[in-house]
Length: 274
Length: 351
Image (cartoon, rainbow over all chains, first blue to last red; front, side, top):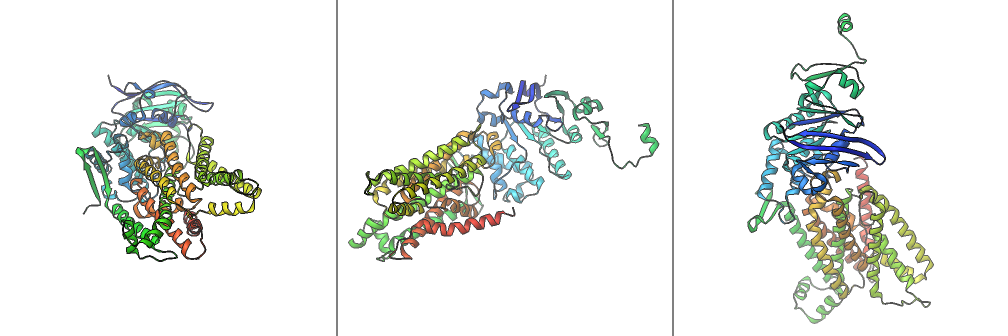
């Protein structure tokens, strides 16, 4: 049986009086890429943030490798799980190397601020994200894709088994989106890291995720391999959208094509017969 | 020669990464500080040769010069140096904590709180003949308490499941304005000469510093300076935002409180002994950032030296340029600081 990296038990989350997630049970398998999908405001980011202990639950709990995170110290958690929030910002003038070094924080003390291990992990992180040549550049001078790689390098330097990412590709153009997702896929493949992320693009989610979790009505609507789980009915239920689900010609994973307006240049007869 | 040097001692129990360029700049600034210190000590009504000053500092030198230097000049210049260091480091910490380059002790109302305490003290403890009923030695304590009370007040009011930078600044500005109003009110209600005395003090001056001041200020400053430098790594992660900082295992709220307390301690002591010397907390960290970058391990010490140099120079100008008049150092820090502040606002309006 696959081990679970993270589990939630009857997790309820709210902002003030508004309930966002209601008694949600979820198991996130170790060593796989899990992607949360769902409509705007369905609570997927909120769920991710509470798993990362950035948000305290209203009730219920989150287990990290079997232990309740409420009982672990924040440093202990930081050694096992890294989180990259949405749109992080670095102070002006901070260099890539300085940013990536911060990833070593949970492993350091005020006396030991640059051990040999720290140095190695930072260099490995820069190598994995192909940023060695850019390490003295300031983060704000990089392109969108490079900047996101720098933040990912920081989480890599943290050297955790689990990496959580909240919409890591939003605001990036297609090339950079693929750049980032390819990097994360490699990290999972080669270094067996558990990756959990929130993605907006359903098709990219199908292509990269081993395990897709669809959130609706404050609970998990469906979970599993994209090719078993993603179909027209799910898309209609979760996104309220009519679509056709076919097979991606390059990867074979589900490809969702929504109905709606647009220039239809197919032969009219073919379009009407479906 | 590589850009960095790994320092590993005691079989790895102690390890640091040193940026060579930053270390070099720090060393240069250290020399400049010493130079300004010596030259400043030598300048005054009686001009003393810098070499003589150095001799006196090491215990020798002619009697007359020794007297002037040790009785009048040294205490004042040491206080100026300590105040500059304190304000610069406090400003640096606040800017890092609040993630805003415009943050400074003045913005958070902390210097305002100290000012109210001082004016209040002067108003309260005066009898009908306008003489102080208690010793003036209590004044610094009052200033420090004022700074502390306001810091707590601002923190408490800004608390809502933790303290966010924006809330701190907004509440701080509100409180700061309130403090200014209170100060003005008390000055108006009190006798004229007290207003004038209070006004000079509020502008910021190291005039009248004595060795007792030094004996209190130096250990206090050094201790908190060391604590601040040790805490530099927590400021580094706080600068990345609360969520990233928590994700890295930082106890954000606890650290924020600690940093605020360190800042208040440094600001309080500065205001207590030198009044409201403004803009140093804003300028020094900025200039330091330009020179050595954004990592606080390098930023705080560099900022400290720049602050010290600034205040010593401001004091020097104040007591020599308009001789025999003594112009408070605060006038000159404001004179350089205000245009610098405007230049900053101008520069960031397009960002």
